[in-house]
Image (tube, rainbow, N blue to C red; front, side, top):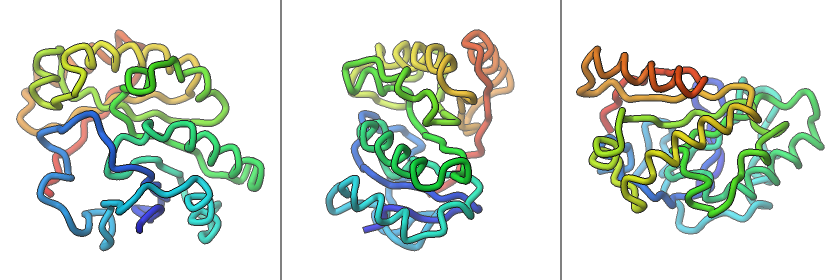
Length: 206
């Protein structure tokens, strides 16, 4: 079971395969074995406990990485309470030597968990990378297929807007596949209106 793995100098953490979306471009499609990031499969036979995840961390030279990234083959904020517990334990052990912590997310944490989690990110999470992916609710729903329907789009925007009060770096991302320059510029405008940055990601064929 792959819980932590290395990629480009960062330590990635795979806690869940649960996701409320089924994005058209997702690397999970047609990739049952292995990953572009690791030779091991990121499909979990079961979700690791928080202690198993901590043990996986402590089996590595944690402070040697440029960043710790909670990502995985699912939406990591399904395990947000465990993420925060892990960060607290790592900060207790490594203090200021702990690398910056990032969560790659679809921005649906409040929607998924049914509560406002943004204040709990303060002092724990250094960067949030939130998948914008589209410039309106209809296109977003057609591309990402969230189980919550079109309301997931506004929930994601609201999450980004609030989170920047608690997290030093909030970045929204779009995948460049089939995007026109005009659409990318509109994405930049949306990110600016929320007070966050935009990063355009290159499409990776799984």
